[in-house]
Length: 86
Image (cartoon, rainbow, N blue to C red; front, side, top):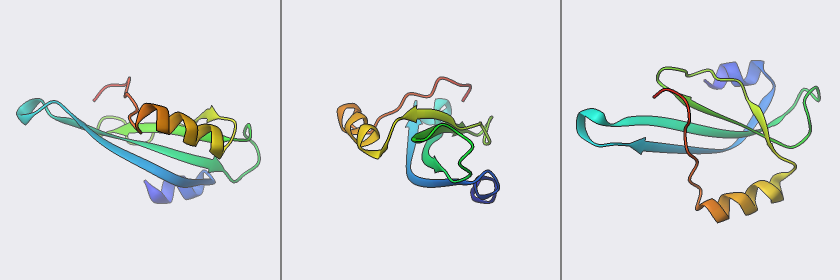
């Protein structure tokens, strides 16, 4: 995913990896938090969550700045739900 992120001009500063379920029902996903380096998108923190079924989802705006993102991460205990198809 790293080369694709460079092409899209994002700087990833945080990644969370999660596993849901157990045994044969286990599924994994990762959430990435990044800044847009192109200057074309809304300033702030952008997020995407990827799974094996969708490893290249688009980033979407998440927070106005790092401090807002960090405060949210602490409240959530760094846990982000994946709403896509695992």
